Image (cartoon, rainbow, N blue to C red; front, side, top):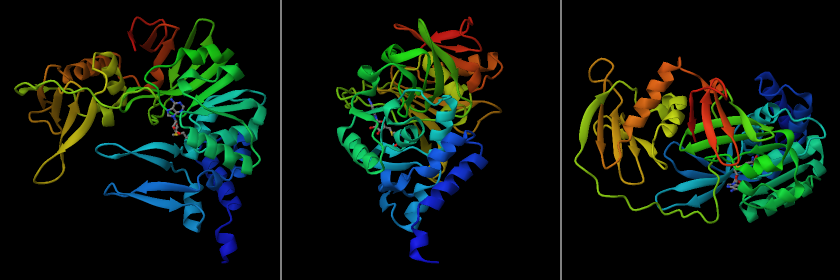
Length: 384
Ligand SMILES: C[S@@+](CC[C@H](N)C(=O)[O-])C[C@H]1O[C@@H](n2cnc3c(N)ncnc32)[C@H](O)[C@@H]1O
């Protein structure tokens, strides 16, 4: 076996395309050709990987191992930003299996003009350029350095789509209308500018995620007065869209209160176990910005309770094991009861025969957005 063969990307890209087809991620031969033709390692020359202790390691994709990773269904973190308590991934090359599933879900046809929000490494943009031609592809990223790096690397491969350093919430009006918009960063609500920049009958696929883990991809179609559609069956979460003006400092928590203890029949940690309930909790009055976690048992070091913390300092802790059959202990502190909206959401979910994602949908107009179950005109809907 020679080094030349080991570091050849072409067979790896073909193998990736075959694998994605075998796994059912890819059915359209045009996307298969694009996956086999785009050298992902050129667009992702280096990345960071986190080990089981949480430590990040730097790697390059020019070795045989690096190439294997670049041509596998793996997300490659390409940018880390230091926060006060941790390092956060602020850009990555999305997993190829997810990208092709999204492209197929969007039902993109030859001749379509597409806007990709969140250029990142440029891999999604490269697949689009390969399939649709540079003239039909535009992409924006909030980070000018990422845009310039992607522009240079895409050009080295012969792709020259329109790229711009912009806040994707504003779309890219000067090149509109688009038949399709694909966003690979999440939004708490769908920006109405996207509707304005879509051609009649156009569609947008985006991860609507009001708060951590709460949401999924939703495929919205353009109607004269609204965007409307259903969530996709497989759960997906993208990194949150950031904005230049956003103040990263959380508000100072208010004083806490004495712990209040009671029990609940709602199973703990819906953000891991039942993400539909977790999204419903957001529309049942959970305050914005709640973060979630686990408390470990000090003796066994195993997770003992699910925890929630609100920006005002309120907390909720729910035991992971039921103390009496089907009842879990809840302890709350602070001014805002956090578990109650989750209980109401769980009740709603049971009441409607435990809907899965495709039974949930979203309608967005210029001024309002709401979530519904089963049908847009259903009496069962909530403002988002
Ligand atoms: C998961 S990465 C996109 C990966 C890309 N699909 C690829 O294949 O390389 C998400 C990207 O969204 C970008 N982003 C975050 N906020 C944004 C915003 N307001 N407007 C446009 N892009 C944004 C980030 O800088 C990041 O590059």
